[in-house]
Amino acid sequence: MHDDDREIAQVFAISALNSIERTEGITHVGRTILYELLAAGELQAVKVGRRTLVTGESILRFIKTRPRANFSTGLKDYSPT
Image (cartoon, rainbow, N blue to C red; front, side):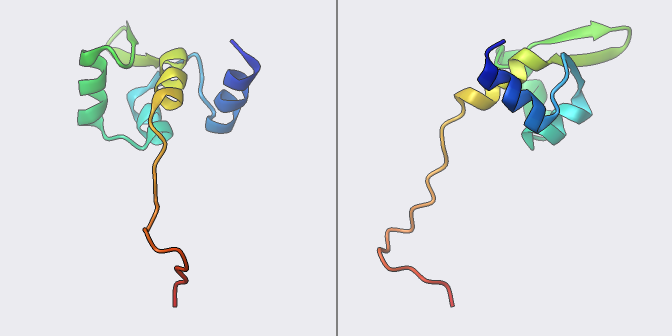
């Protein structure tokens, strides 16, 4: 794991294996979308008994590969009132 990955993992408190509930909290993505991401291969998981645990490595990769949000208002001198 690279130093940048370690820093991200610390900030988001990402473990090697993360419950679906914890992954929801880390990514702010709902359960249905998480299962769609797992089915699409964008996140990886392992089964431990009946539990599905998402790998920390795949969560890091998911976070790092998301496009950056652009909140440009198109106004040069925007000042909220």
